[in-house]
Image (tube, rainbow, N blue to C red):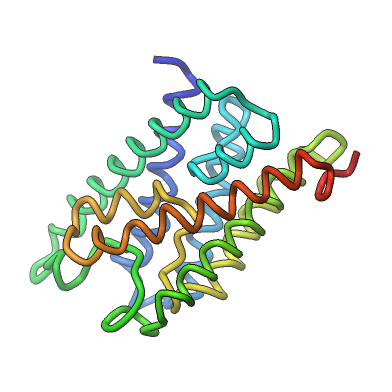
Length: 227
């Protein structure tokens, strides 16, 4: 097992544990703004902590974008995605173990920070709204990542730029879908919550991958690349 693989496992677990953990364990106290900051700060932490090892993708949509931008091989893409899925499950499992220690916690009622849409979920936005938000925001997120990490960009600021972008995306979209922009982040909690979370999961796989793919294609074509 390579250092890169382990780094992506750990980094994705950090993202799920910090971001979804803020929603599940502290949501009532910190609100949506606090949850948004938790997701952004998790990315900053992982970027500087494991970024030098793996690039801290932590997200199949980011890895797909990097692949289509010509930055990684198909084999590396598969390895990254597997590591991210494992990391998300580990992060969700740790969060579940913590949350279930509180009297009255019920995963069917309180959830695990899973994504969703429609009746009964946060702002009750439609499927169309969920697809548009997830595809567009993932496109913008991956575009920022590819731009911030391209040759000539100030490398020491990349992690901060990426984390702040994710926080901003959450500030806009939490009430719509809980914000995924990351199939792995959605997969981990959904696996434990099951039910509607698993039924809705395809949205949070298809839309982010589409957005990430478009970002990678445009970057490789030079549309969003400096040179």
